[in-house]
Amino acid sequence: MSDFDEVWCIDAGRTSLKAVKLQRSGNGAEVVAAAKIDNPGGSEVDSSAAAVSALAAQHDLSGALIVTLPSRSALTSFIPIPPVAGKKLDELIGYEAQQNIPLPIDEVIWGSHVSGDTDDGEKEVGIFAVRSEEISDLLVDYSQDDLEVDVLTLGNVSLLNLIRFDLRPTRPIVALEIGSDHTDLIIVNGSRFWFRSLPIAGKDFTQALQDKFGCSEQEAENLKVTAAQSEHAAKIFKEVQPLLRDMVSEINRSIGYYKSRVGEIKVEDLFLFGGSSKLVGLRKFLEENLRIRVQLTKNLARVRIGTDALPSGIQQETATYCTAIGGALQGLGLAEVDLNLLPQEKREAVEFQKKKKKVLVAAASLYILILFFSLNFGGKIREAEAVLSKAGIVKELKKNEDTLEELAGDESQEKLAKQGVLLARGTGRLIPREILGIVGSVVPAELGANVLSKRAEDGPEKDSVLRNIEADQEILNGQKTWLAGLDIRKILITADGAILEKTSSGKDSSVRIFDDRYEVVVHGFRYDAGNAASNDEKLNQMIVAPIEKRLTELYGEADSGTARVERTVLAETMLMFLKSEGIKTGSGRGSKTDTTLNHGTNLYPWKIRWIHPPLPGIDIDSEFENE
Image (cartoon, rainbow, N blue to C red; front, side):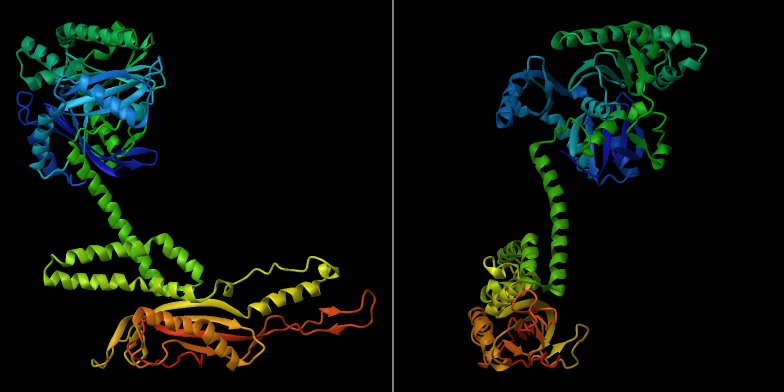
């Protein structure tokens, strides 16, 4: 399904080319540009390629481009098939296409559309086929102006899409588009539709007037549309009347045939489209002889004409541009019938380009997200892991790394250097994930925040606030160590462990500066009956030693043999519960003996810090002991 935001659609006829540029506008669409270019050779020579070149010289057609083929180019069949779905439906349509297209299937490009259900419960399918050679010739013509066609559809399908989108008929109608060298009849019947090409077109009326009055083609064209103001209107109408009778006969035959296919339906409205629909006396003659209402299309309901398109005259000639507008609606994804007769390889190329644009946008967003979290990382482990997991950073960067390694063997030394920089940057963005993995593997889950839920449920202490608080405190006392937070920030650091400001450029060029390192600080608090020294040793056993071991596994032994991970346990600074005169106990109701209990628990704040990845052979002094 086409879903461009803005498209050009070209409807190239034998005598003129009509083109519109359409974009979405709320629930409808807006024409932002329009053009009509007469073919240099008139109707005598099919010079539509020259008209396309003229259009390309006047307007920028580099965006999405839709082209409509005249319906006379297509072989169209409507067939009923059994009510199947999915892959079986596609297979059945393919089989029916081979049976109903009177040409070798490898010599045509075809498409289909399921138009609705028949009264017998079958599905009605329209099959449309065009010779491959004709499509190839058209694409060559457009390529001469460096134009890439994104969708190739049919004129009658485009007009049907406009009728569905703008008129939205609720009862059976007939639409008649009278062009210079074609007349398309469309019957719209609920979800179903039917096409037929009539043998009488605008050029036949023009030729009749040329023969009668001995005038030029252009003069005859003017007579067709201005005869109402001419003193010779009666003579002009008399000359075209035989052709009008033939047209009425063809319309009646078409409606009668359609009724024989689908059953009795009542058609009360006929809508006129196309440049020759303005023929003098046409609307009145059709109404009187068909005995149905006939309306000439002058305005559209859901397609607005923008102010920039008004100079083209589209508002005065709306009926002439309707096919181009319908094709553009398909390009915007607003059409019911999505028919694309481009060769398969061309369609795949168009889809690839669309996906390529989406991938580039997604990739840009991903790297912005990575940069944001690399520079602003902090908070709880679980929250950070969830964000990284959802973003899919690891998978994407691993894919980039693999791709760059494959390219490395084939590219020049200059490209290899650039790729190395890109690979180093991509690998560096994996470091926060690696840090989270280290902390998550060595810090027990129970060190995180807990919900106190184990309280006394039996015995006399059940309703005692004091007993509940004491029970909670026992749980906390048993836990002894808590993890309060994790901070990760990217830093500039010298080889001797001095952290620089981001704006620092380093005055001494002999000093090596690492710009791919992170400072990691894990902090929390601990309860124990001991003192700061004993708690420091416990912290070393529980957390620091395992982190040191993991760093050794990843990066090898430290060159200097010194510890890579610092730890600091500060003096007891706070209580889990404070003294409260409101918490008292006694021997029972009315007892005069009450004792104020101190339910406080001394806590020792602690911090663990290291540089990741470790610097080679550096013993880094603590920078937060004096914080």
